[in-house]
Length: 117
Image (cartoon, rainbow, N blue to C red; front, side, top):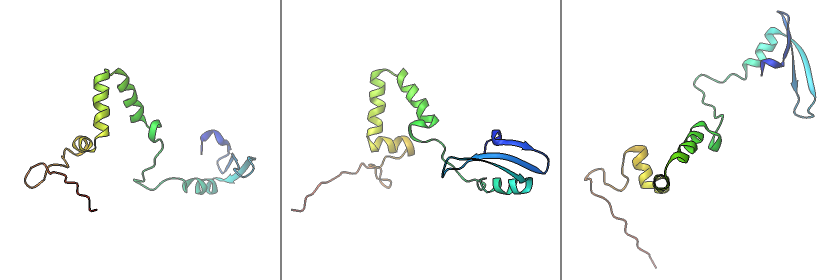
């Protein structure tokens, strides 16, 4: 709840307003301070609870990356786009592990396609 919705506070009573979703009617209530606090407390998340506020194109890191790509040359931007389209390159960038190379013998694995017809 925004602080701007609190109309008055007299030490024991809090007067505030809210807009009801059912009929968009503005309701003004006057509650005892303890009742007001008990209604507000239920909206406080648990400790270490993660909330997603912005995601996708609205996320801050995405906006920063979009701005950085504008300053790159055409060759470099095409190179970075090719990295994001290749799952092997993404795995190397993210985890520093090549998914094609065997972890035991360090030999690149081969993919054999066989059709059972």
